[in-house]
Image (tube, rainbow, N blue to C red):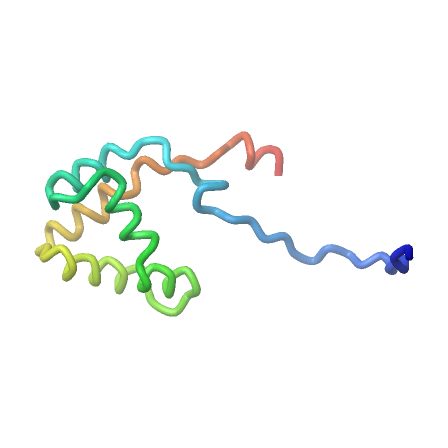
Length: 104
């Protein structure tokens, strides 16, 4: 059985994944330094940040980024300055895949 042809429907939106697709982690040194400070295994900080229930809720727009980092600040017993440093040091290794962006 052949599918019934559909009328031409204009594309009204295209959705792209950002994390790990358009934005890739090229340098994990900031995260690794924090793992050492916190006594975590290699890659564990990233797993906690991206795999936690609060981060999943943030990805759905249910909680703010500030609430996520406040949660990790409490989890790891960080003061305000340490929280700001962790937040700052977590992201610099992310790089936009300009080749993919140009292709799109």
